[in-house]
Length: 494
Ligand SMILES: NC(=O)C1=CN([C@@H]2O[C@H](COP(=O)(O)OP(=O)(O)OC[C@H]3O[C@@H](n4cnc5c(N)ncnc54)[C@H](O)[C@@H]3O)[C@@H](O)[C@H]2O)[C@@H](O)CC1
Ligand SMILES: Nc1ncnc2c1ncn2[C@@H]1O[C@H](COP(=O)(O)OP(=O)(O)O)[C@@H](O)[C@H]1O
Image 1 (cartoon, rainbow, N blue to C red):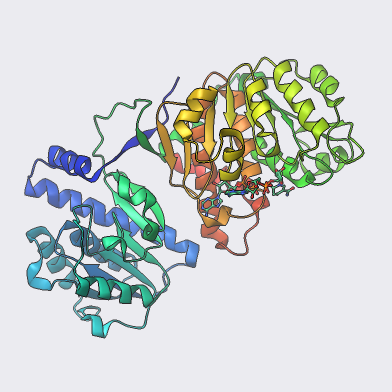
Image 2: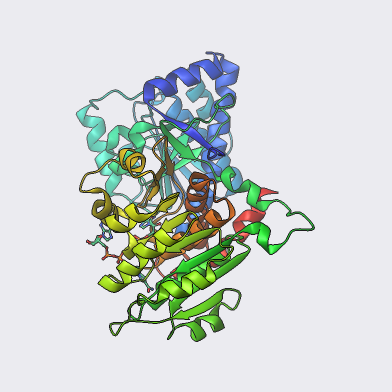
């Protein structure tokens, strides 16, 4: 088993101890880390801001600075921002005055202030502009101890009212009051940010603090995009399609034909060697025109339009050398169809991925071997019971579970791997179907390693969604365009 590329998620006390260990209280090392954090924040902000159309030349940035290193990170980010956007105008607000700055934060401020005094100015809260293109909140970081004083809280609440197109925060949204669209977790992800309502989306910025980390399948962990790197490498010259697995998908119904097609498009870009898709006979020809590289097999349907029990004989004929089975997208919930699926998962001797309507307790229980389940919160409640714990359920069900949501969490009963990739561009019908196809395709390639297939699919899907959002924004995007983004992101591992 290859453990998924990931780093531990730490409590604030653990993060403090880690930084003390790595930086050893050495001021030069601390400055280097702050500089790396600031540069990483600015770079990530520039990328993420493309989802909102980018930062205009001559745009306005507001930087909120506290006393500590969180403020220093924000000030360095602003200095790097000025190298990206030389005409940017930067307003700096010191929450506790300039004199309160700790030495390295004061140094970060001196470096920013000397760049270009005309475009960088200190503002009081009264001088805040009504509108900014972007902001960086560095008032409080993970050393924050509540409560916040009333005056500062009132100002942070006022900050929330400003018209800011893109709000970034360093490590944690200040006092859990300042609102962020993206919170940049520098060096490590700290536990409180994961559930912080004000944090927006979390981005983990790896600063190399975990050099000595040995991945263990335990605890809460943040998935890293490096999990995709092996997929970017050359394949052996004499490879054969049979080396890359064969996936069989059973999906679709008269009501939801599109889900089967979307899952197929996801699977086709997973790198799988062969793909066979069992769909209602009425769909096969049209789908073959859309995706001729999959082998479409038309199956009998019930009068209501779901796959009929006889689909089992088609599966028996076709399962030959298959290395994984994926069932669920768009099947509908007819009794006959679900009974057929329960038999199908018993029939095969290969790992099974289960999604959507096939996520029923009796179907999950019928799988003999390895299984990957990809429920959203509603489906998870259906199979595991209301309020069930992900890790405990995965362990009890002997399954790898991908619990989808704004942050998707994956566990096979050991560690809980969180994916901070992807965003609201995915909040539209069919994006889960693409994920299940991708997951099935990866499972067919690593049938002995369902955890690797599931975590990799989750990261890949999320990173592709980010790429899509950067191209077209959140609103006028289409799920059908998501599979097309899966290839380009592998090209960035050179
Ligand atoms: N183009 C297509 O053909 C599409 C077909 N789809 C198919 O539509 C069928 C129904 O899927 P749905 O996911 O809509 O099923 P449902 O909306 O019926 O979800 C099942 C239960 O979970 C709840 N629920 C749904 N989303 C939730 C969430 N994010 N958090 C908490 N609870 C949630 C619902 O209230 C419901 O009780 C599936 O077969 C699916 O594959 C969808 O994937 C959309 C696109
Ligand atoms: N706000 C969001 N931020 C990030 N990811 C999201 C968000 N909303 C939905 N997603 C992702 O989109 C996918 C939706 O899947 P699912 O709920 O099965 O919908 P569907 O059946 O319509 O495809 C999941 O991968 C989920 O993690």
